Image (cartoon, rainbow, N blue to C red; front, top):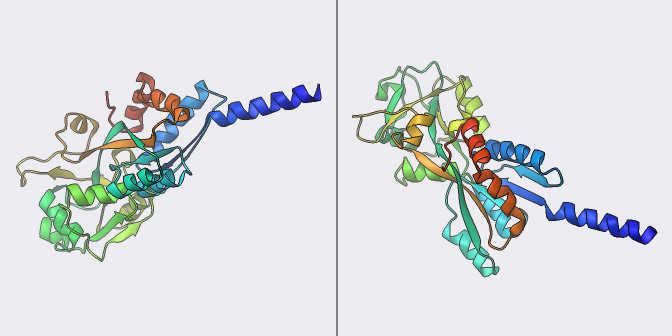
Length: 270
């Protein structure tokens, strides 16, 4: 009887462990992954899913180190990250789970409501330092940005700043929520966040990529139609051959999972 009990206990531990999944990385993906995991666990109570943020770079490093099963990322995996996996005899699998409109935000008390890509480049590279230079009041611009490990930081640099360097004076924030809080409390502030993070405590800026001819606000409709110019894919990365993660990924890509994408504030892939 004792042997049977031990055997049954070992089987239970094996079953629980086989369904354990760890997700780590992008703060942009974080609220979505948390919602998806909550719904997934209701349907699969024997499973175990843990979700933590830290930035895309942190998640991808954890995938390389073997300390996470899925890396959440708001940018594509870099060549050097793929090389480290290849050197370790591993191969990554990329899955697009949603799309996001990267939103530029200012304090609600700021009169400026529209900016061109060129003006944004000037602000974040330090060439434009006062709001009066872009039609606002005589007020110093306080620039908030994500830290360098963030995929959002890199995507913004590549697609908005045309790969130019951020100004040395920018204030780096460890998480997206910190940018929302800082911008909401600082009249001259500006920053950027994922669409799902937008709240009434900040004001989203309309953006133009055609020199000021047309401006579009970061909304679900404009992002879905691709009218809003700063739309990016959001990723799950896992190791090829890791079958443990497939049921969860299948759920995220299912009709139910993609409905959660929309209700969380992002754009479904289907």
